[in-house]
Structures are given as structure tokens and as C-alpha cells.
View 1 (cartoon, rainbow over the protein chains, first blue to last red):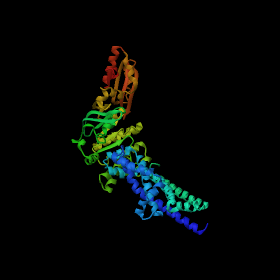
View 2: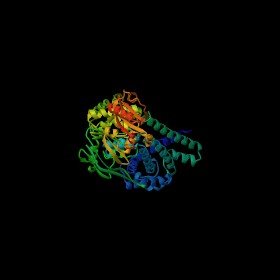
View 3: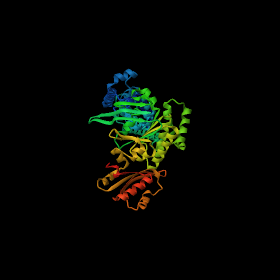
View 4: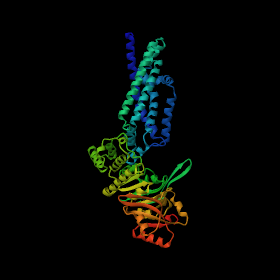
Length: 219
Length: 333
């Protein structure tokens, strides 16, 4: 393998990790509050509100139903507005966040739904305010499940980031497309695929280990 | 201390209106252990949730220390709830917090300082006899231990009232007895008023002072446990006292007596001596008795001979031994 290719792969791995992690982080900053809102405004929630629930649910569903590749192209003007360019890793983060945030919100919502209603009732009976129930009871009780959700989110976002290679995004996806697909270099294609698999494996394994360590229900 | 005034709770569903609690008026006195007994679906849990306003009544008022809780706003309610502890059938502990952190939680809400919180939690752990489980997580505890933690947590803010929603229904008989013993101790030592929801007569027998019998959202009768137990007026109370189908014996012309044990020594062979002293045969049709701390509690249905003189002797014997009895098993009458 020549030196240039190694350098290329190195920067590819770095860019992929950069895009994935930053996007996941921002997606969670948006997705957690959104997921909490959908959860608490549900008919069984602690702040029942049909209108807010409908609007937030609709936003999530609309964005989630647009295929990522189409979303990527459709929001190009918005991407340019935010980062000033439409190519490269930074430009990929914008559509990644837009696509991942609603997905994360759904993951968060389903994790929160696992929290035992009896525990929430007990917290209420002890005189907790709604905010306290969310921050001191529901989120901490859902923590292990939220972490499992995060490992799923990371793998999904990683997959999306590779797709962005088609329209000028960076990372391993771009290498696989530009070298492996357009130049028929099968070996490069296979190596990038192997790296993608390894990265997903790493996050999955790390996530599960952390969950096993922090979940107090499993002892 | 807690007063229900014509409280009704209706739930509206697609199938129509369900009346869970129907025009209930109750008065629970300070310092007593008050039982609410009934079969599943009688509305007991819904009723007890009105005391801390986890359920809002559709009609009627609830007073706590003469303050009308139904008129309190969110913020006032939260303060009231600190005076009303609650424990549940499924314990409802925080699974991701240690035993200590579970107990500390209500104190965090009340804004108690960290040092003070831990000190108070340790006192409570000593009270419920779980000092060595301080750093354990709920999943590492047995059912009885979990309920003890829940009791400690409910008492953290020094409440005036403790609500127990089927608190022993998920526990075995021995653990049930020890939890009830702990509740009685809390009632006597700390003067906490206790309201107990249950479907088991023996829970009421063991610790309650007064009891209300509930069925289909209505309080069928209420009074001192002894009175309800010895002389149940409602069919629900009779069925709770003498479960199953023993009633079927009572529709013919046989002479049936219902004997109630209400704390006589369980060491006396009452029935054996009856047959010897009265020189007669009796037939035990059913018994539901229990030995609680060396005393007998429960019911027994016996069939006695039809001869009038024998019946007289038997009744005389029962009177002499201070046993309450009722003819016809108490179901025909």
C-alpha cells in the first residue's frame, strides 16, 4: 500500500469520526429536549398537551420521512447559510444534525417510555415539581436505555455520513465513492468498508460495556 | 385529620362513564390506623389517591387539617404532599439510586442541606433496620427490604400521614407480618396516622383501629375493626371475613354457628374442650383462623346438634369463654 493511500485513509477516519461525533452531540442537544417534550405532552404524560404533542410529533415525522440523500441536497442553501460552504466535513454536519435530531428524539422518547409509571407516581406523591420529575427521576432512571439509544444513533449517523460522500462530503464515505466507485479501485473500497465496520463495532461494544457498568438493575 | 365530603370520581372512556368512587364521606382521625378493605376494582386505590390529590375528585371536597385540598394550587399541593407519605404495592423505588439516595430524595426536594439529609436518612435506616444496606441498589434487596426502604423514604419529611396502597400484597405472609409490625411501631412511636388499603382481612385485623368496607366505589360500612369483624352488616364484609363458598352450607335446616376469635389465647383448645364439656359432637364446616402473637383471630363455622338442650349448653360454654358467636353463620340473618 503506498504512502499516499495510508495518509488518505488516516484523514478519512479522522473526518468520519469528527463528523459523526460532532453531529451526534448536536443532534442530542436538540433531540433530548424534543424527545422529552413529545414524551411529557403525550396523553399519558405529566404535562398533557395535545397541540404541542401534535406539532412536535409532526415535525419529527416529516423530517424522518425524507430520505437522507434527498434531505442532504434539499437543504443545501441552508447548509451554505450556516457554514458558508456545501462541501467538506463541516458542510456535512449540518444535514447530519437535521436528519439525526428527530431520530434521536424518537430514541429518547422510547427510552423515557420505559420508565415505570409507578416510580413517577411515587415522585409526584413526594411533592416533586414537573421539572424535578423530568430531571431528577425520569432522565436518571432512563439513563441506561438512553445510552443504548446513543450507540444506535452513532451507528446510524456514521452510515449517513458515508452517504454524504456522494455530494462532496468528507470522510471514509467520500474515499470509498471517489476511489472505489469512480476509479474502480476495489481494494480501497474494501479497506474503507472494513474501517467503517470497525468503527461501528467499537462504538457498539463501548456503549454496551458502559451500560452494563452503570445500570443498577442488572446486578 | 382527613375528611372526605361527598367525594365522587368519574372516569370517562369510550365505553361511557365509570364511577370509581361514589359519594364517599369519611373521617380519618389523627393518630389512628385506618383500613380501607375491598375486593379488586372496588375503588380503594382511587379513593386513597384523593388524599394526596394524585386524583382530583369529580365532585366533593377533601380536607386535610381543615384545609380544603381541592382548592389548593400546584405549589401548595407540593408542600402538602410532603406531609403525606405514601408506599405502594410495587415499592416504586428509584432503581438507579442507592438505598441512601432513595431516602434522601424527598429531602432534596424540601431543600434540606446535604449533611442534614444524610443524617436524617441514617436515622431512618436504623428505624427500618437496614443500616448495612445503605449503599445497595434496590435490585439487590428482597421484597420486604424494598418495602422497608420505601417506608423510610416516605417518612423522610416527617409526614403526619402515611398512605399504604396494598403495601403488603406482593409480600409473603411472614414478611407481611413484619412490615405490618413496623407500620404499627411507626404509628405508636412517631404518632403517624396510617391509612391502609388492602384486600386481606388479616391485615386489617393485625393493625387497624377502624375500617371501611368498600365495594363498587361505595363505602358499605365503616367502624371499629372489632365491631365490623364480629358483626359484619354488609355482604362484602361477610365475604371478606369468610371467603369462598362456605355459604352454601347455610341454606338447609342445619344448625350452624359462626364463632369469631378476636384475640383469645391460641393455646386453649377451645373446640376440643367444647365437645368434651358439652358431651356432644360438632362438625367444623370451615375455619379461617390465624395465630398472631399468641392470640387467635379469625372465624370458624360449626354445625351443632339440633337438640335444644345441647345447643343451650354449647352457647353457655361459648359465653363463658367470651367467644362471640352468631347463628346461621351470619349469612342468613
